[in-house]
Image 1 (cartoon, rainbow, N blue to C red):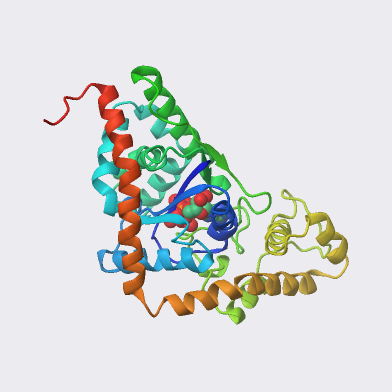
Image 2: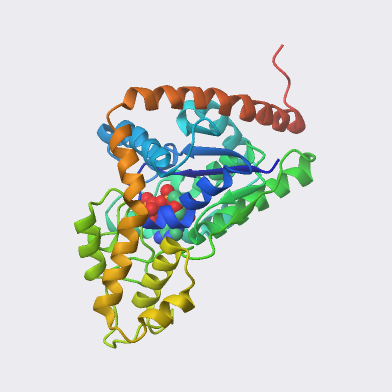
Length: 334
Ligand code: AQP
């Protein structure tokens, strides 16, 4: 059976990019594959974070996964730091295989170091070695496939490079995974600046549709999305980045093709089109929001599910770590 692994950071509430780029595939893949999904809280401390909210955000993120359709009975759903000894030790072993040069070249390292420097913050070693921890997350679970958004392409490539190098030097220990991207909306762009991806750490909330935004707020954000000065609804990522982003979002939300949407809305003007996009998003998120309202009343139950998930995760990842240590020649504990 195909094995799947993916994770998200508890850096804030989920947004439409997380949902369409990854979460929709997470839910679909649990029908046919052996899936493991993780709240990657160890990743969330690489940029300055607030200790007072980390734990609540961790439980809150798991609730949003379940609200979106991740089924804890059919998947392994856990918090990374609950199996942190295994993930951190694996990361150290991979640190001995990864090259500083390849880590420095990662686009996200460059962007985040600039952001940290701009805020007079420190560029931490964790920011540099983040992809090594991510490599551990994925490879510990023998994942064949990793459902992620397009922005993660380089991270999955480096995981394959590091795992491949390990296998070459120490013997075949790791499965080398491939990234799975959605057909539409693999890179959802910021509504206010469609040249940048929609992101939790994006400056303006207006550019981001949060999965828990109420319907009025969603409609308003889409209405004020940046478009060009024309009025024809057409797909052109270069000249019509804002409209093209909305077309991709609507295609993903409704299951219709971009061509069909262009045929229907081409001549109606941006106002009509934006209203339809807003409604499509509201309808898509309605069941998720209803389910979330039920879950939020019982954080204790969520924590219980996560504890059970950590046991399941450890049962898979600890033996993989042991295989890696054996291959590297460590003396087994007596
Ligand atoms: N805009 C997006 N379009 C498509 N997929 C996206 N993902 C994130 N943004 C988009 C996918 O969501 C998963 C979780 O990614 P993350 O935890 O890195 O979320 P984020 O919103 O990107 O968070 P941050 O804190 O703003 O992080 P940075 O700035 O580091 O990306 C992944 O599968 C991702 O592809």
